[in-house]
Length: 499
Ligand SMILES: Cc1cc2nc3c(=O)[nH]c(=O)nc-3n(C[C@H](O)[C@H](O)[C@H](O)COP(=O)(O)OP(=O)(O)OC[C@H]3O[C@@H](n4cnc5c(N)ncnc54)[C@H](O)[C@@H]3O)c2cc1C
Image (cartoon, rainbow, N blue to C red; front, side, top):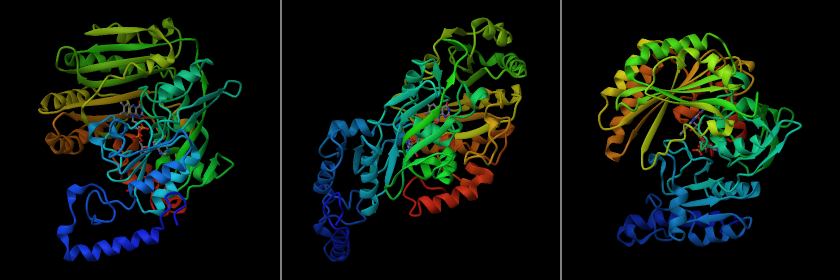
């Protein structure tokens, strides 16, 4: 008897067999339009489920008071809202969305799904463009109610629930004059970002978000709730930092936080036309050669204010305005289409790339560049951007000194890439679903190779390649150890697969 839904899985599998035998002779008795009904639906029907509504309702009653189980048939609006993702492409119709509120809720949901052989996913910020946190006809473990953050200022630690967005962490840390490494966008989920890497403005000084995880509370594939750190379950702690979403659900992160140089940092945005590519890239290379770990740039290639592909530079400086202006003097001396730079709080700088994007299908891929930037390479990318018709494309390059990332060795944790490189994310975005196959084919077979031409070819950043493998390119020399941990901690492959 399943302890949560009150039905014996053996009993349920009897009906699987019944359904298999009866449907061959009585196909007309199965009505696809009659909605999910375990007792009438064939197992190969797209809406077939091994868990019925009464079972899920019973299960809901076993969860903590704040938790909710959302079903399309019963909580239509709330279900639809909870199915939304950053990319429209990632919206799928789940069998049930379980909005968990405690680690025990997560554990119960994993046990329910695995004992009924139902696929499940963990969802934090929902930014996986292709849907790594969505499950068609499966169970979504939605961590969105778990967003508490507490700060231990003396120890410079931030303790964040597994469903936090980066903005939650930034704002809580800021109250104590602290900051955590994260992404350059505030609405990205800490769960996905930090478990697979996490490049941000502070990476030149302090490495990746994953390098700053000092401990975590996790729920395993068996539903066990464990604390992991360099002393407890050290093997899992090693794997968590780079391959966490393949191994466990994280319900709490403990991050090392850092004291910023002052109350405010400096940054903003400068926009340049495509004709200025040579001058901008030269200025950025001069700036980079100063080797200042407190400075960083998010460089975006895409349509700018003149309606053509151009360059948007988001500079960042962890220091005073005068230090920043001196660091970026070459870039600031160039004429720009648009300019808005000033001192501001660190949390605010992480909102400048937030940009509203609704109703768009998006696909990502991963590339890298070995410094310095090459103006001809950037020009080729701009030309490719101008050539597309029917969809939009873009490139994001994070320019940070390698010092922070190289504080760790390649084998210190599952995340392997410890050299002087710029992380590059490439993407396509389209409105009409029928454009999708052509746009994604172009992204992966034309645009990604072009973007990657100045980098190491046989590697991927899985947060940009969207966990699609191959695992050897995501984990490099660490792939064997990651695979061994997968076999040990997730032998039935219930979390995100290693492909
Ligand atoms: C607008 C935008 C900006 C970005 N900016 C940056 C950036 O500046 N730097 C950078 O490095 N990357 C950046 N990325 C990439 C980003 O890091 C990945 O898309 C990341 O996986 C998103 O995490 P999420 O929690 O929002 O996504 P989700 O779709 O919720 O999750 C992604 C994966 O992580 C798993 N997961 C999430 N939370 C947990 C958890 N608590 N426990 C176990 N598994 C979990 C999910 O199951 C899924 O497999 C950006 C992406 C977008 C869309």
